[in-house]
Image 1 (cartoon, rainbow, N blue to C red):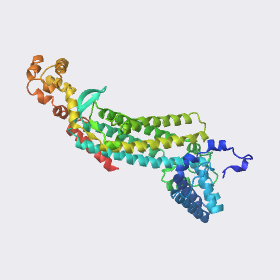
Image 2: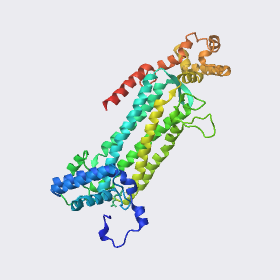
Image 3: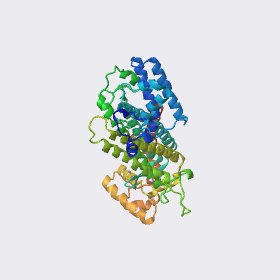
Amino acid sequence: MKLWGGRFTKEENQLVHNFNESLSFDQRLYRQDIEGSIAHVTMLARQGIVTEEDREAIVNGLSGILADVEACKLEFSPEYEDIHSFVEANLIERIGEAGKRLHTGRSRNDQVALDMKLYCRDEIGELDRLLKALLETLLGIMEENLDTYMPGFTHLQKAQPITLAHHMGAYFEMFSRDRERLRSIRERMNTCPLGSGALAGTTYPLDRAYSASLLGFSGPSLNSMDSVADRDYVIELLSALSILSMHLSRFSEEIIIWNSNEYQFVELDDGYSTGSSIMPQKKNPDIAELVRGKTGRVYGALMGLLTTMKGLPLAYNKDMQEDKELTFDAIDTVKSSLALFTGMVASMVFRKDVMEASAKKGFTNATDAADYLVSRGVPFRDAHGIVGQLVLRCLEKGIGLDELPLDEFRQISPVFDSDIYEAVSMKACVEKRLTVGAPGQEAMKQAIESYKKRLEEE
Ligand code: ARG
């Protein structure tokens, strides 16, 4: 059935139909479309625009469609242009005349804007739950690894010792910001476009505030042209998903490095690794690589929609139908990446001994050796030079600073005493770092306390 047959004399060409249709992908909006229609007709009846009997017949018909779609008893037959026409035609088939009254005071333009908002809102809730699960996993690792020492890197060169808890804490912060971003988008987009009509509102006495409240919006949107032309919230969502994907990608990259033969900081669970068809010794980090790789499609969706929207005159234009596949794909991608990533992190084994040995071998305690000299009156610039010489000597011998005999320390500077070994131990190097946000245990415990509160409050 066509919604717009009256003015047309020729049949629609099949190729045109195929090019124009969106049912093949917007069928996933069926729940939101029906939810919106129920709110709309409830409001129409309350305003006396349709009768109580018609409202009841329409609501029952729509509920039947919903139940049948969910029970796979009703197929989305490809003759319909989009989910809106599909539902309306089906309703008319079921309940006859009354079904034809549903679209009073409404256009597909405000209808699709509403459906997309409802969909994005629902999905933000899902994403929030997935992010929370990841944050809880990270918090668990942090609590268990307050004294698991490892090298911290700058330029991918070993820099200063940190703990695994501290490293995980950095990602905890990133994913917390992702959650906040999504929540603020949800709040900003939460105005209801329903009742904006095609672009200029309607002559029926709609109660837009009422239908907005039925659908859980903070209120009706205030400009009907903007309401049907606005896809900012989709772009904001894709932008937040891009940043979130970038975080997942950075973390994946670290896991790939840590899982490499050269590092061996972690061992991925067999369930999250795959083998090679030719090299029997291989256990590849495919899941981490795919999460990293999929970032490209999420960025692509953002760029795609920004480009589609650029230059569109007010108000609705069919170009905007292009928002759907991009958005659905980006959301699906991020949801599956998040779920898989959390499982991978929760099941991977951290090789604490390898991490600590690596921190020692990489002279991550060199700054602390210099600080030791400074605390004994040596100017920092001189201390820097002295420790540089010590590092050179250790490199020649293939040992760490804590393995160099005391007399060799003293040959380079007589200021060194036997307490230097304690001063350059990983424990001392980390535990002295107690500024807010630093890896020292007491500082970390305070951070963990606020993270826990943050997770509980919600
Ligand atoms: N399938 C369309 C979309 O996704 C629905 C709105 C159609 N409106 C119209 N005036 N053709 O944007």
